[in-house]
Image 1 (cartoon, rainbow, N blue to C red):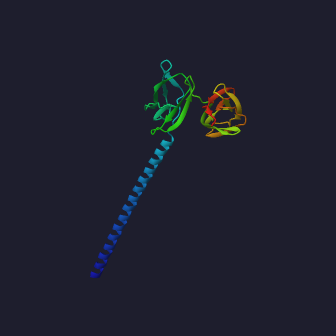
Image 2 (cartoon, helix red, strand yellow):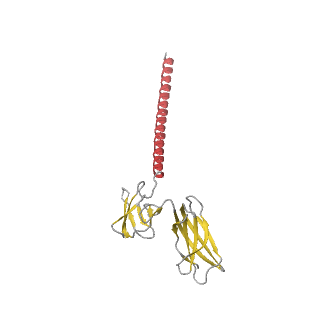
Image 3 (cartoon, rainbow, N blue to C red):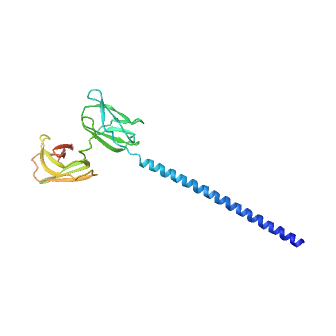
Length: 235
C-alpha cells in the first residue's frame, strides 16, 4: 500500500512539472507571435511611409499670373505636391509656399518669359518650370542650357555646350559675333528627339574672326526659337 502511495505521488509530481513546462512553452510562443506581429505591422507602416514619400511628386503650375500692371509680382498655385520654396531663376527671390500651394514673388518683374525654381525644405532645386511672357508653361518646345565654353585652340576655336533638358527641339544653331550684335550662324546641329537628360555638344570654328569672338547657342523648334544660351567670349 505504501509503495503504491509513493508511486502515485511521484506520478503527480511528474505530471505537474510537465503541465508547467507546457504552459511556459505556450506563453513563449504567444509572446513570439505578438513580437512577430508587431514587427510585421511596423514594417508595413514603414513601407507605407516610404511609398507615400515616393508618391510625393512636385510638379509645375500650369500658369503663373502677374499681380498689377507690369512690372508686378508673380503668383502661382501648384496643383500637386507643394514645394517648400520657390525662386525666380537667376535671382535670390526665395519665398516660402503656403500649405495650399500658393506662392507670390517678393519682387516685381516685367512681363517677360521666366523660369521658376522649385526648392525643397533645404532650398535645393528639385525642379524648374519655364513660362512664356503670357504666363503659360512652356512644354512643347523648350531647352535648358548648362555651361557654354569657347576655348581658343589656334587656329580654331572649340565651342562646347551642355543641354540640361530639351523637348521638341529640332536643331541647335551656333552663332558667332565680334560685338554681340549682329550674330551670324556658323554651325548647325540636329537635336536628338525626345525629353533627354544632360547632353553635350561641340563645334570647332575653323574660321574665327580677328579680335573678339562671342558665341551663343540657339535652340530651335522648326522655324521658331525655343531658347537662347548665354553669350561667351572665346578665351
